[in-house]
Image (cartoon, rainbow, N blue to C red; front, side):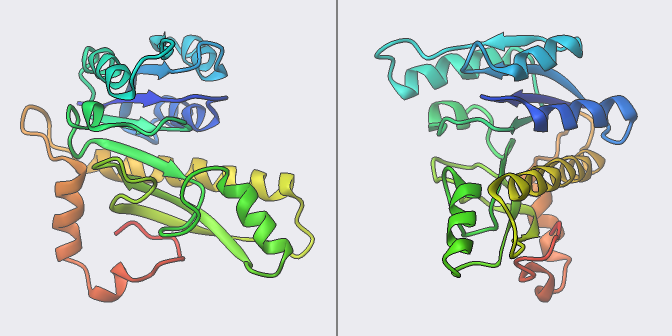
Amino acid sequence: MATRIAVLASGSGSNLQAILDACAAGALPAEVVAVVSDRPEATALVRATVAGVPAIPLACAAGEARADFDTRLAEVVAAHDPDLVVLAGWMRILTMAFLGRFPDRVVNLHPALPGELPGTPAIERAWQEALTGQRTRTGVMVHLVPDEGVDAGPVLASSEVPILPDDTLDALTARVHTTEHRLLVSTLADLCRHCVPRPHRILPAQLLAARSLALPRSHHQEGTREHIP
């Protein structure tokens, strides 16, 4: 049984497209069952429609509290019964009103290495630090989202991206995005391969804990090299 994935995206949806393409090619044993965007004009919704996936615009109403919006969002996502909820360029910080409905099942992609440059705009900040000699590399990580901490959940995978001496912001951004697409798909594929058919579902956090116990300590501490713990 294919793993059911719901994707939340606020922008162009290039990472969503990487997921859709990998599913279509058989590289990712999953099915995207819904794409939700808080921005009705987001290109991600167009990509979903082209792929035949339900595309759902869900804007925050004027004056609506974050938790109230997240409650509505959770209802919409839950209606599609996902195994995983993937944040692929989702630009809102989710509250426990949403996260509590999908414990250990929300996966985020962030264009920085673990513990570095939380929030936005991470790529631009990395490039600016490189210009002043403070940084020679950045990266990408995929992690679980257990609570409202910003880009701080348990890391599933990370990959370093060097910043070259003659880099422009556009060149660095392109390399980071390429790494994002590859790392997100490979990490999701790893999660899918270890999923047990429902209702006896293994959640990502349980998988991460079980696999971590079986690995030598040095593997946990790789930090900047690409790894899937």
